[in-house]
Length: 72
Image 1 (cartoon, rainbow, N blue to C red):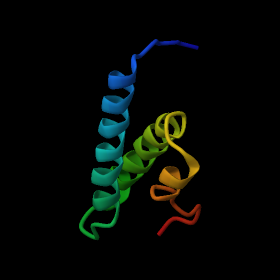
Image 2 (cartoon, rainbow, N blue to C red; image 1 turned 30 degrees about the vertical axis):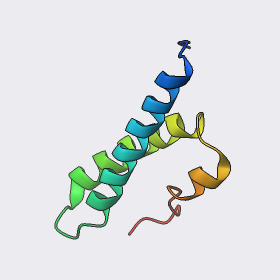
Image 3 (cartoon, helix red, strand yellow; image 1 turned 90 degrees about the horizontal axis):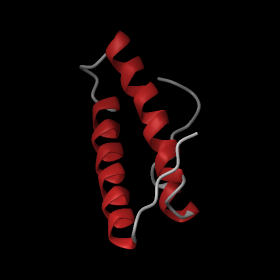
Image 4 (spheres, helix red, strand yellow; image 1 turned 45 degrees about the vertical axis):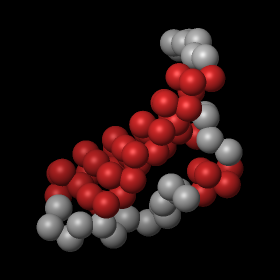
């Protein structure tokens, strides 16, 4: 396990970067032109970043980015 110390400003910046990355990946996952292995790679990356964001965000903020377990 790796631990890092951030001040308040750095936490807000990290929170912002993770949200923007999640937003971008959600758009890509909703794009019907993306298929196959690329979609799978985006889903795996989304899971990792979502878990990182879950450590910083409140449950209300987190619910905006929660995806259903069923894959399209």
